[in-house]
Amino acid sequence: MPTDDDFKQVVLNSDVENACSPPVNPEEDFQGIRINVPTQVQIDPAEPAQDGSFVALPVCGFYQLDLGMLITNSTIWIHAKNMETQEVFSGLVFENDPGIEEPDDEPPLEPHEVAGQSISAYFNPNLPKYVAIPAEAAKYQVMVQIGEVRSNIVEVQVIGPPIPELE
Image (cartoon, rainbow, N blue to C red; front, side, top):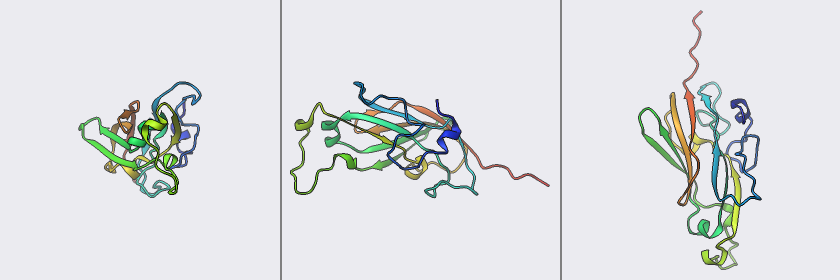
């Protein structure tokens, strides 16, 4: 199980496997989405995320889904529910998975032509880059959705900025 420090090494907004990727064997008959997040992250205005967001909160994930379904709907959403207020924040990550786009000179694939074929990918979006969560302390339940398929639900605690020490 990765530690919160392991998540600090994740290349944000990348599509590569890393130490925090969910343990899923792509060779197995797995179909779905799995995600991992750190148990807690701390807002530090002096150290924003690499992508300029107020905090680095990588959602490390893997999906293996039917290619026919992805051609029909490959929209990737991240949902984060504030566990205290129950308010849900959602953000679009990618409108289309670049892995399933066809070259312009080829006719587009039809879902029935590729039904039963799977496609898989890793992803590591920084949650606050895509989801407009407030820059304040809160505990969230996080889920990723691609088309109609939903991931497991994970929890993360966002801790407020450190309090300056009085001299």
